[in-house]
Image (cartoon, rainbow, N blue to C red):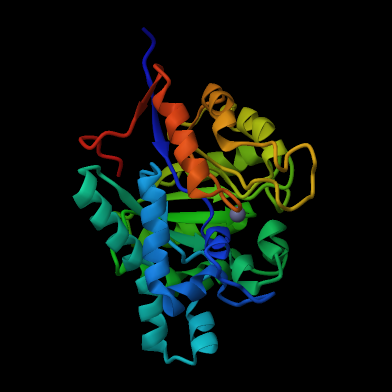
Length: 315
Ligand SMILES: [Zn+2]
């Protein structure tokens, strides 16, 4: 029998799930889902536990749009208190992880989310990366470093650089990891079509570059429209990387596309994603814990898949 594919189950979208729970984010909100870390921490523990219970092996923290500046301005905090908020975003997920591990005996992980520079600008520029045209790599590294340092004080299992639209920003954040040789990370790109990043570079070149960094344990795509995923995974496969490929699409919410909305289901994609070589599977915006549970069930039924076991050491 052919060797089984080792598959890791990731979670779904945090911000949209919070909205489903009744939270309202004002247009252009500086912190977006990261606001809940401070305002309703208990709800985040509940949300993370929901994803773990639905079968996610790794949960991503609500720190995607968190920034020291954002916490200072929105909650009128000093530097120290803003840092505490940033760190709380990770420790809430760790609390959820520890509780579910204790109840189930499973080995679970927390990935601390680090969103793109564009996410914190609240102008959707994480979907086109246009700021990299006027910022140097060093400026991007310098902007990211204080937030990364604060988050790393909490010892997350790994970092998740998410929705990165440009190769320059990927290099900027991964260069920062040279200060932290033992830290593990994944990095996923936002893509505007089936071939290129949000900023327009070849996805093949982009993932190749990322995979060269020693800290990186997996790479791939997130918050991409489902209709681009097949082509993107076909492209990425040509890079023949020796690290796992991540796929975490949104549910197609950026366009009111009749061909996907209401019909597209995460669990239906598993077969094709595995065939194309992606093995760390989850979702982004508008993918909920029920979708993750359904995907986990679909994976459990496959004889050619082995899911993460307690004895496995992921990172
Ligand atoms: Zn998303």
